[in-house]
Length: 305
Image 1: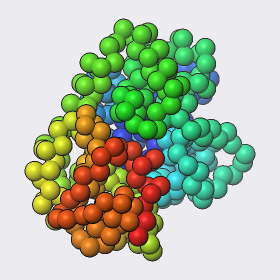
Image 2: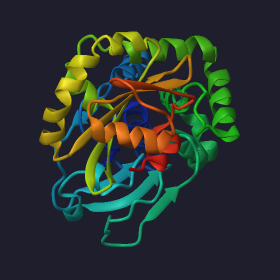
Image 3: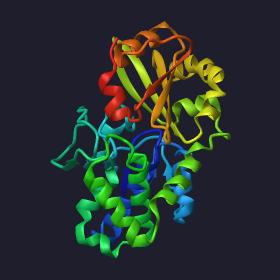
């Protein structure tokens, strides 16, 4: 049985895309496969599963020697199981930069395309076979695209991502603005999560100025709810960093509707990074960054000390 999984701290795309591709492998290619996750998905992803009546995939801690794996929505070893080198990776489907570091036992299929969402790539790879997909597969695909593009607000959005989303919405008889608002409302409900859990919910590892960073993003339509927890979030950062073997945590609260981010500034190092990277003066324990909504395109590429 092939295991299909995405990155740690699964967001909507890393929850939906494994399910989409496992369906395709099992039902179209007739190769038994199952989706698994590397952690509890975020609230939007959980909402998506309930909306389309899909069971939560099994959550795994690692893979074993001989396991066959398909990796989606990442190719970064830091975001993958610790024992991946003992397993058999047979395919990678991703839309992030090529990180390197994965060694395979045999030649494999690798598809990395400069699109906003892994699900868009899967749409293209399936071609006419998507016509036989049940509604839940198309529903997950649409949700993933709208999530990764922030309903086309993100600069990562391509015209092709938008065309695919609009086609899927038409097939499903869904009004995108209404549906996207339901998604974002679900994503914004973080009342059940601890401060540490929020810092880990959607984060990536990154090395900056010799320091190991955890770059965390929280996308929301209700930023004030998170900003009201600012002091607690800052207080939780050292513990989260220590637990993950990092030196610093940088948290960007993304205001989806107003298309801006607020970066929490817990110390002088983060202040220097913010001023050098975004060209803004920082006074106090936070700074607003107008127009910044994408970690992949507007945050990580510009970070410097």
